[in-house]
Image 1 (tube, rainbow, N blue to C red):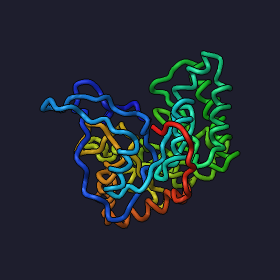
Image 2 (image 1 turned 180 degrees about the vertical axis):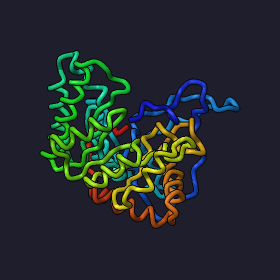
Image 3 (image 1 turned 45 degrees about the horizontal axis):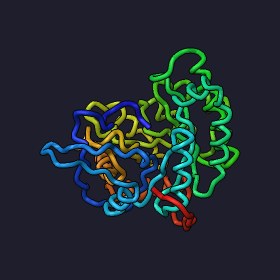
Image 4 (image 1 turned 135 degrees about the vertical axis):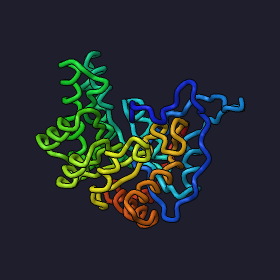
Length: 310
């Protein structure tokens, strides 16, 4: 999850969903989204009521434009549990579970960080949970020795959970590139490690390439002021590229500032292909292959459970 705006719903913006883009010819997956976050109902510029869509309605829209599935990502105990449970019911959804780095100091101050990590460890064993994330380090929102120490302790515990369960690791890295890299090398990165919403430069892209770490690009790569990010994309090996929304945040151009959703991924994919000078379908095929290598198949039948599913 991003705290950086650039598509995060907020007061004063048009909170209606953008029109759907032209469908992709070759389907892709949204490798990081937050479908539990539903933007509040709001008025459009002409005063009409805004939309408030369930996660299944969002997935229907995604399917209609060639987004075949999503990795639904937890950021705390509650959203991680929700993600794991809904993935059991929904064939287009796989789940990732974790405490966001900014949640770790909160639990540490409350004295229950170990308990929260134990819940994440249990959720990581559930069917259709394919990743531990988003976890990592965030020095933009967190400062102070005790809070940063809690982030490190949580990050290291998540790395071990991923390795123990042979799951992918989805990293949140904000203002902490060097520290994240050092931690991965010191503790030992899981075999499949993903830098979610990649925000580094050419140097970080080359470090990721040297270590076989995947780089997942979000709508930020379409922003006018993201030249360094596009430079990083240009040097990233194609076999290490993924694409994501981080919805409802980071809505890609041309709809920046409005709510994001998985059905808008074609904008990001096409912008990436244009910058790389390649065909969008060829890039989509490569990214789909990469995504299935990291997370496995979405094709396994979900488990039918009683109770609410929204």
